[in-house]
Image 1 (cartoon, rainbow, N blue to C red):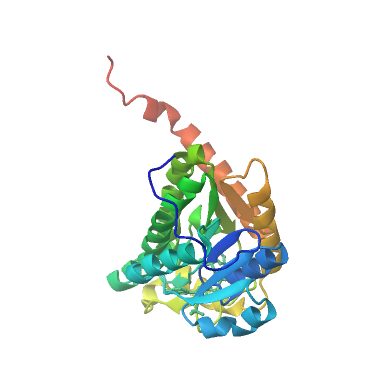
Image 2 (tube, rainbow, N blue to C red; image 1 turned 45 degrees about the horizontal axis):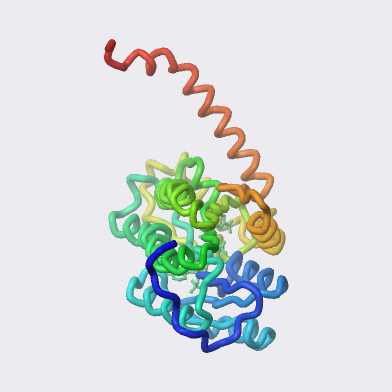
Length: 291
Ligand code: NDP
């Protein structure tokens, strides 16, 4: 076990497991919050505007505790995790869910846009994960859920920047899962397709300034993604239920693919990647030293 001292005595009573969920004010974050509470657990629901969670908190007194957290603020991450540990003495499930879309060709995406999205999808979740691990190692249990995307497994025109941030999160998480398994801690990377959340809505989705030369490749995504708003096939409540099922399984998978579009896309990508690796296998195997 780690040498981390136990957290201070709990100041609040936890019902069931204690969850810390980022971006809990909308979409997947809200759906996972509702599913966890329904399962009898307690959720510290983190949001940039915690007042957006007032109704949910009022409906579940002592079960949904809204806190203010912008996941791109490292000082605030430390303060929130310390506060939750003071309240309950533990965090059982961290859900790194906060995120947003960005559409743009690689040439169209600015350095600022890339760095901002990396802060949101990679450095924030990495900091939160680091912050909860000492206590999880000490308690000998816990789970970290990383909301990635089918775009975290493969990419296509217009979503290179978004995919880069999710690929980064997935790489970190694949290693993390193996590092923390001996401490009884699970890591679950979730890869949804198109789900009916606020994601594709005008307020959340960002677009890089367009270069006309990319109209043919990126244009369809620029109009198609916002056009899908409210019509996506995926149901966030069913996604939340699937996440809880995977977490509660004896053998929790590292990756959970959600939605028919994501299952089709990822299986197709895996087949194509394997076929390409095999087609170039002999060339690759011929590059070692003879000794
Ligand atoms: P929503 O827009 O409905 O929810 C996103 C949430 O993230 C909001 O609560 C938003 O808060 C929050 N958020 C954004 N930026 C920050 C920040 N800096 N700090 C804290 N919270 C922030 O979309 P989804 O529920 O769909 O998105 C959740 C996750 O799911 C994301 O990581 C996304 O990449 C992923 N995903 C979504 C898919 C989909 O089709 N819906 C597909 C694949 C992956 P605020 O209201 O303050 O903006």
